[in-house]
Image (cartoon, rainbow, N blue to C red; front, side, top):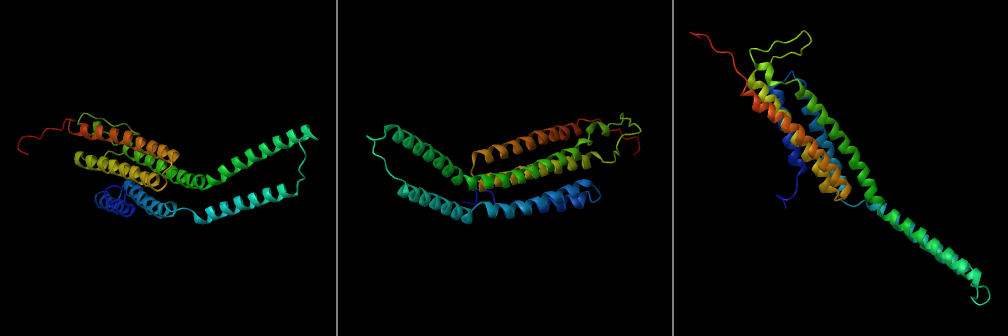
Length: 239
């Protein structure tokens, strides 16, 4: 259903268009490079999601072969062991039953581990992808960190070590808005993983990524709201 699932191709298109918009307005800013990295991650995640969505058939075949081989070994061992008469050696029979139960439990635990092997492999790949998204989120936050609306005030006096403050109010608003859009895109890229791998652990990790991006985006929009509240220098008479 097109309106119930995320389309990785359309998210990539949005990321590339956003990169173009940023380059057109801020060609010399580091934010353009960040947008390029987000587009690169979108391309990589689209490819990885296509791999993660279907079952890993070769791994399932390997697990099935191991299970069948283990069952064959148990049957072979059971066929060659001599059976004891319970009346002749009760203690030996009890020890044999206990050993059989322990062996069956260990075999059951091993079977469960093999069945969950595919989910574990997919979770590890998702974890690597989410780590990259978490890193880019912090990079985006670093780029908006010095964009303070207070610096637009005519009463603001920079120090010798203050960073360059050469953005107008409109440019700063657009810059911060682009940062917010990039954060939103990282959340959608993370959601592609939970859509491809319906696992509780993956869903929780994706939720953490989305919450991180949302919390930083709220800070950005607070700055955007403050831009209009900053007093502007009054125009002189005759200007």
